[in-house]
Amino acid sequence: MARRERRPTPVSEFLSGVGMLFRGLRVWASAPRLMVLGMIPALVVGLAFVAGIIALGANLERIAEAVTPFAAGWEEPYRTGTRILAGLGLLAAAILIAVYAYTTLTLLVGQPFYERIWMHVERRFGEVPESGLPWWRAFWRGVGAGIRLVIPAVLLALALFVIGLIPVVGQILVLVLGAVFGGWLLALELTGLAFDARGRTLRERRAALGRSRARTLGFGIASYLVFLIPLGAVIMMPAAVAGGTLLSRIALGESITPPAQDGDGRTEP
Image (cartoon, rainbow, N blue to C red; front, side, top):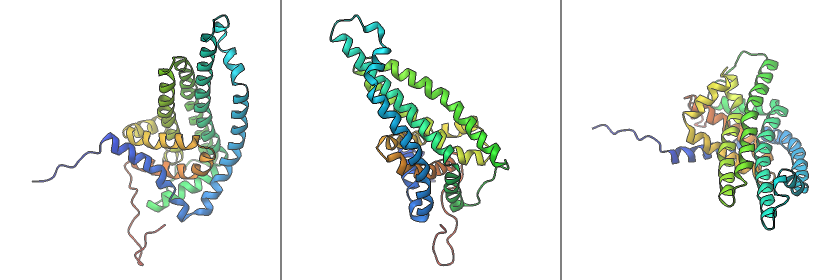
């Protein structure tokens, strides 16, 4: 009697997605110089964002007061409590926007470096796909997709701010929703090179990744959380691009197993 093939569970798919990010780290072994080059734009953009986050932190109390004028006449501790909640909500919203905007800008600024990382990973499993578009059209296509993804990111940030005003429960929801939806947006952004090279639109990218949503979220949430660690985004951005390429190939039904070994019994890099 033939065995029935087991379908992967959502948990196993989620963990597989997390593994995509850390499999991207293996590229350090095969192309360390290329990965170091990928850290340069991540570092440059990161310094600018760190300055912005420091400025936000220094003015967070005044901003929280400005967005809660209705609490000005309230008695303590309600006035201060409301402003603390507003500040936390603003911080969560700012982190979401910062992580997404950082990823988008870094990929744009460092496109030549990240294209080489993407090509290196694709070449490991076969021929590198070519969209047939000139570089300038491919560039502006990527910019357009990034802009269209900014809108849901901003709307989500506003929703997180409002939810953050709910005592206790709101803070938990903000953390969870920020990681889940922020991770989804990151996954969409980090798979752009592979999908664009195959001539796939943003809508087709969403549909393909949505068919393996647990795996996509595993990769995206892991990337989101790592990017929150100081210098984590700088070190992991090249690996995230490599992992996004692997995720894209799986979402499109393509192999992530290297082809036949060479005559010496070694796998081609």
